[in-house]
Structure formats: C-alpha cells, structure tokens
Length: 243
Image (cartoon, rainbow, N blue to C red):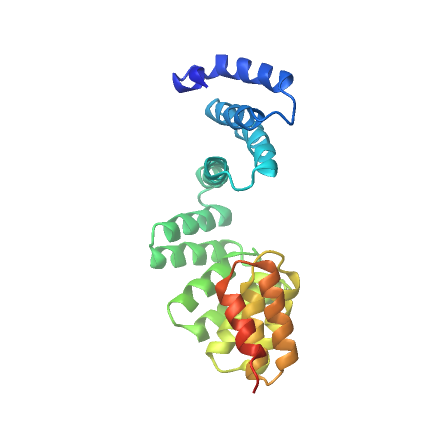
C-alpha cells in the first residue's frame, strides 16, 4: 500500500501478488489485498486484470464504497476508451457518427447529437441503434409523433428490439394510442432483465385499459427488478387499492 501511494506501482504489484498467494481467503486482511492489487493493476494500465481483483472483493463486500467507485470509474473509462478508439479510426463511418452522437449527448448538446445520429443513419440505413437514440431524444423534446416515426424505422429492422419497443410504446402513450402501446411495452418488459421502467410503463397502460390483474403483475415485476425503487412500490400500492 505504501509503494502504491508513492506511485511505485510495479513493486507494489510484486508485494501484493505475494500477499495474495500467502493470505488465506478468509483472512480479514484479504479485502485490503484485493482492493490494492486491483487499484495497482488499474494504475499499471491493466484494467481488466484489476477489475478481476475488485470484483472478487465486491462478491464478499458488496457495499464497500471505495471498491464500488473504483469499479464504476474503471468500467466507464474502459468503455469510453473503446468507443473513442472506434470514433478516431473510423469517424466518417456510421459507427463513428453514432459514437460522436453519444459524446455530444453526454455534453448536453442534444441538437448536435441528433445530427450525428441522423448522419449515422444516412451512411448505413440498416444500422441498429441510431433510430432508438433519435426517438429517445425527440421524446425528451416533447415530439412524440416524430419520435414514433424514427422508432418505427428501427422496428422495421428488428421488431423485437426491447429499447425500440419501449420508446415506441411511450410515444404511443403520449399520442393517446394506448391500445398500440400495450403490445410494444409487453415486448420491452419481456426482454428486459435489469430495468424496471418498461414494466412500470406497462402496468400504467394496463391500468388505463382496466386490466387491474395484469397491471398488478407488471408492477410486481418492476419491484422484483428494483426492490429499492420507491416509484415501483408506490405504483403497486396504488394498483392494489380498492376501486
């Protein structure tokens, strides 16, 4: 740890790897070994190896904040590096423009991002992804009809894409077409394994269609996906109230 703190990462790696071999897996000091080994490997530009050590620690101590923060930052940096590499090598490609769109969106430049996503579409009309991004941004601008048109193009390429179905379902809701929203949100809910939003949206659509049992089931799925979500809990409670 001292070697790490004076930026002597290579010697720190040697000492930590020796400690890793010698310290039993159930020793209280094992957490520190894994954390500092992971941090050292990441500092030595070996992020994947470093993440193995950090993830090993998180399996045992899932609430350890410094390890969580390091893992999140490393994954973000690694993802950005890979995206940027594609953009730099192939900027004038469909992939390059799409990546540029994500970068502009992250900076808050929505109009610039829309232009980049449209350029990506123009270069490769059959590329999956830009249409969903365009539809999502147009929904955020309060333009559901334009969003639905963009998302319909994406659904023509892949009718069961969960993200396209989700945003197309939201667009249908905003346009007052609840009956069309339901099957789209059903697809999104069926194929989403981590995001409670499709199930919550579907529950509200079912409620509007007077399908209380289906609405309650969808709300319960949302709560299962996000047990700590107050919104999912409140939605289920509202659905279960006597009529």
